[in-house]
Image (tube, rainbow, N blue to C red):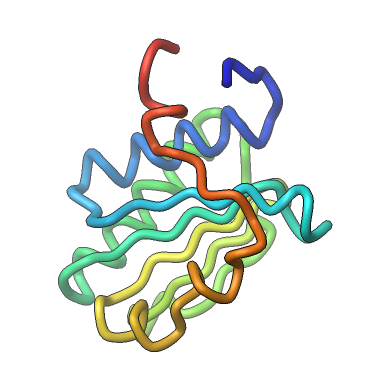
Length: 123
């Protein structure tokens, strides 16, 4: 996949941040062909409110250090679904119950799921 575009780099950094904090079931959906709102959706799960907030903080810190700043976020206080909008990518961090309930993978099935290894192997 070896892209050098902004969305790819942001996705790579966000995945690394979430993996460092032990996010579960990270998925990347390429929505470029089906929507103009972003290039990629990142979806991950945490086990509890503290971990979900920690995942959010880690993504924000890693992207911020690279010069990418979020446009908007929602859900941090309740931390059952945190949405972080970075224009080119949108990061969704769920608790398990809400991830199953909202099932973004099904809703955005017209997008193309991309293996996380496309962003984590051989930089």
